[in-house]
Amino acid sequence: MPIVWLYAALLALLFVGLSFRTLVMRRRLRIVIGDAGDERMLRAMRVHSNFAEYVPLNLLLMYFVSSTLPQPWFLHALGISILLGRVLHAVGVSQIRERYGFRVTGMALTFAPMLASALTLLASYGRTGSG
Image 1 (tube, rainbow, N blue to C red):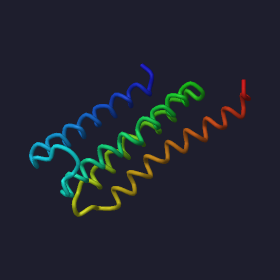
Image 2: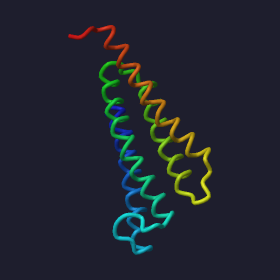
Image 3: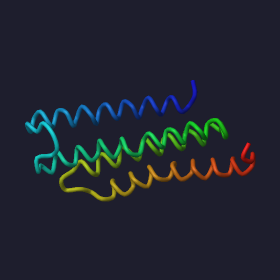
Image 4: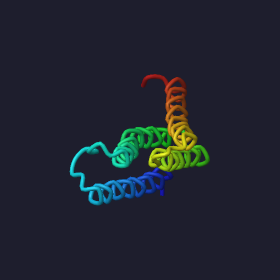
């Protein structure tokens, strides 16, 4: 089983969990759309949407890297970083009295594999040329 599949599946489960948490909060707070000025709802929405903004590109880049540099340790490092980054970000941003360390570390662990993947792909492109 390709390594990317493992992390795509784990991240999909996390996304479903964040989605469910947001839906439950909407029901409990009786907020149909938007955040209705409730900071808890806003934070749940941002955790969910931030995940949706960063994970697809990270997984796509990880997939491309797997076709150019299929070193398992590197792919696992990318996947673990994305997964851990998204969990830490969710924990940090979800709290009204936010602990910024979680948020900052979560974003760093989200950007690091994106940057590592992009640089790996550029280096691979440079080695193989444009064809």
